[in-house]
Length: 149
Image (cartoon, rainbow, N blue to C red; front, side):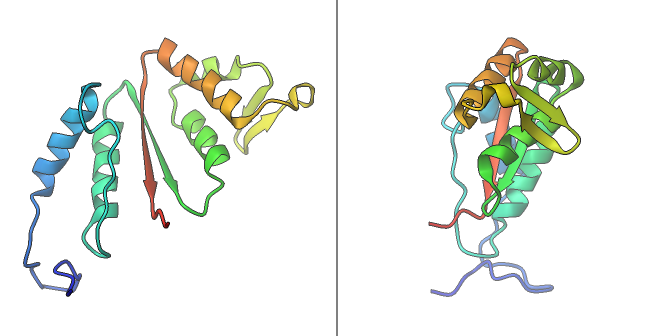
């Protein structure tokens, strides 16, 4: 099957999606905790605009003061990258809350663990961080690009 979204200069695709409407629908849906958009998969052939769509969603949701957007990509060490991004994208109040989690230290170079809590797992860290996120009435959008099975 030929890809109708094959990018080329000056060529209008045979199928054109209304991206602005789709972004508006999904961003409104994300705000509603009972929405079908709380967990979504964007998939399709190469060149159809999946990454562009995720980037547009990132920009839209990042503008909301009670949201943190974490962008991840395959090939990263996902959990440490997620923890670092969650911290770096938090506001100063939430960063202070994160710093109060026993055994965690954050710096400009990323996450470090105290030696006296060597049994702390990434799951423990994320559980503690999301407890702080909830206490601060903040929501998190996670995008994961380039997933390969």
